Amino acid sequence: MKYVIAPSILSADFTQLGSEIKQTEDNGASFLHFDVMDGMFVPNISFGIPVMKSIRKATRQIMDAHLMVHDPIRYVEAFRDAGADLITVHYEACPDVAKALVKIKDMGLKAGLSINPDTPVGVVREYLEIVDMILVMSVYPGAGGQKFIRESLDRLRDIRRMIQESGRDIDLQIDGGVTLDNMPEIIEAGANIFVAGSAVFTGDIGENVRKCMEIFRKYE
Ligand code: DX5
Ligand code: ZN
Image (cartoon, rainbow, N blue to C red; front, side, top):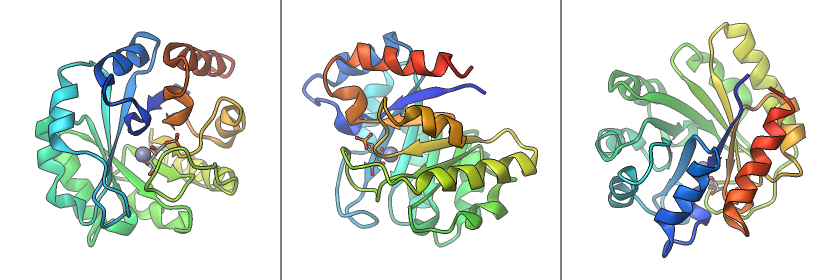
């Protein structure tokens, strides 16, 4: 199992964004998690296409676009053009989930499907033939720095089992309240891609990423 840290730039200092991204990349973070919030699907508004276009030039990391956006199919081409490598849409935000996922795949990108904490895990089953990644939200989306919802561990175990039964190589991403302390039990529950905002961008960024990589090495 390949474990990956995906720093969420929502928690970065936007006056130092380029250098902070570089610190994550130089220390081993192969993904960059890009939290798009539209003020409709989630109360908050974050950032969008111009910011992605700009940071695309600054990093070779896999640009992991998390669209917390109502009816996200409207924007998938624009985010592809801005440099996204992977686009995740929310089950709760799509009038037609399969249509959105297929459109992302047809553009040659990886497709992710995210579920909120109170969405039953069984809803992902019918999409396991299409997706490249399932994102389990361990907070209610809309902000960084929230507390990890512990029921997410059982949800990860259930989905990891469904992925194994599908026989497909699907990544399982966890997002929200991930810290160095809870990372080991999250690994044991079956996640392999770890979004971390405040745990990476608070304090020494390079050291935080290196500590994540040290934890991963114990399990690889
Ligand atoms: C929340 C976002 C998360 C968040 C993670 O809506 O999807 O990616 O930025 O931040 P932390 O790791 O601080 O919870
Ligand atoms: Zn996110």
